[in-house]
Length: 257
Image (tube, rainbow, N blue to C red; front, side, top):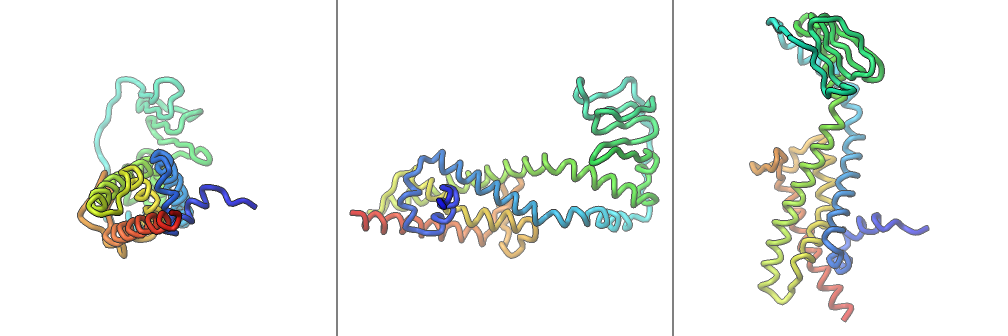
């Protein structure tokens, strides 16, 4: 049975002599590889995070119990019905009428908040105004809303993490390119960027999967990019793997001559 090229590439990322081949890949293909690795890491982290979702309602209810009183008061008036988007709306708000949820995801009317998840549910607006007296109902509602938002949150987080790793590739790839230009072990800039992209393989798995558990042991630094932390431990691992990749490239290059 033939091993898929992507699996080979993941294995080669931990075997320095193979960087002779990995460095010669077009940089756009190296970025494609990085995107796949990050996606797989996200899926694994999501699987680890699933059990926490089942406990989220109880956690919220426990946290809300810390409020001895939590009431939302205030009058809200509305001149016309709100629909988002205008056609085939997901959200409808009409505080002057009683509505029935049909194809929408959320409907807020005069008396209730109705929403669709696995099935249609309803919670009176008055209960949402008093968190402390209706902890169970409010916790269930907020948990459902959060779960519904998770796909969008995951996509946004994926993009931010991807941009963070692209920044690391550009910084470390350029830094090592300049350093190696001062020696006889020169490489082209795009080769160094491809080495950096593949050197991040282990770092991505460590950081993303740890984010579903704890990242304390990675030693977060004060440096952040788009709200994403940089970690001392994984940055050191990344630098070490880059050095090993560069050494592996030149060792294999000499062997081939």
